[in-house]
Amino acid sequence: MRLHRAELFTVEMPLVSPFATSFAVQTHRQLTLLRVETDAGVGWGECVAMADPLYSSEYLAAAGQVISDFLLPRLRGKDLSASAVSHLLGPVKGHRMAKATVEMALLDAELRGASMSLSDYLGGVHDRVPSGVSVGIMDSVEELLAAVGGYLEEGYQRIKLKIQPGWELEPVRAVRREFGDIALQVDANAAFTTADVRLFQQMDEFGLLLVEQPLEDEDLTDHAFLAARISTPVCLDESVVSAKSAADAIALGACSVVNIKAGRVGGYLEARRVHDVCAAHGVPVWCGGMVETGIGRAANMALAALPNFRLIGDTSASDRFFTTDIITQPFVIEDGYVAVPRGPGLGVEVDEQALAAVTVARTEIAL
Ligand SMILES: O=C(O)CCC(=O)N[C@@H](C(=O)O)c1ccccc1
Image (cartoon, rainbow, N blue to C red; front, side, top):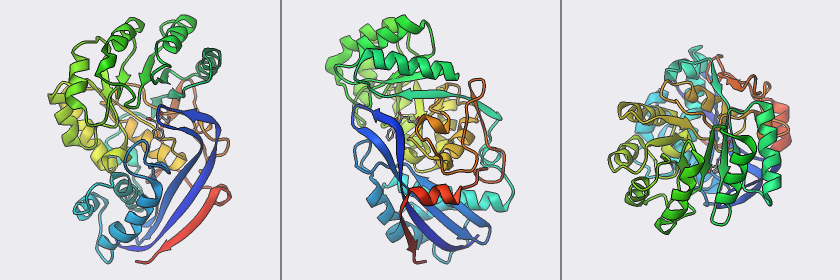
């Protein structure tokens, strides 16, 4: 497969409501899409980095520059296969979300040309996945309960609550009291320290599925210290950046569940390797979301269909975050599930008009 043309789209999509985490309050999702033209067909990749380096060190402007100045030039004129892209991009240090974007676009093009769905290519075993939703930090417990009630009404099978110092025991206790033993977990986005062990021991009373990334990204031994003192399973997100780092975290006892986000680990092929390493250790995984458009959401649904994705992910419908998605058939929740695309490649089609309406800039990359 040869790469003939590449174009970056800078996109800004308004969120249906502000989404607050321990590190930011988002009212819009700014993101970058990569469109490639190859002799196998057109492919799309979505960069999950944020506009600011608050979730990880990557950020959108840098990712766009790395893609155009350092990643795509390494593919110029080469006879490519998507599975070889990560090797070709390997010499470039870090920038995993940027690399994931390039690999995803080429994987989409290659699979469309081969009339194979991403789910089949990755080894998906389900044609629908249970749907979970991420609920941000709210201004009041009443507002939180109304939001959670609404999502449960829509059929979401798992609720993830964002927490931070000052917004932790009270909201979780209120949700437990109001809605009983629903599937419930929390995500701290690294907002706590080992001084908070007592707080997480108190959280054990809520019977949570897991507590996600309570401590700093690099704090593997501190996560192991915490995990040894609480009964709630510890799940890592930001700390796991590759299959090797997943194996290290598991070996250190830092986690017993892993949140897999393809962008965070460098692509969907590395995401499958993380899945396989975790499966080999008997560690269940789930698919984390990064407020993706239907393009990234489609790839996540394919990934979430793999057999060791045994916990419910952030596999929400398009309208969880956006009134209008940029694909022709937005994802919807049906009986608590979302369908896994079965068409070639990502299995979704970009709605050119809807995309144009949220495109802030288009940049042709010289190849
Ligand atoms: O369902 C979704 O797509 C969002 C899930 C979610 O909470 N993502 C958070 C996170 O910390 O995991 C996030 C969103 C955007 C950017 C960074 C992180």
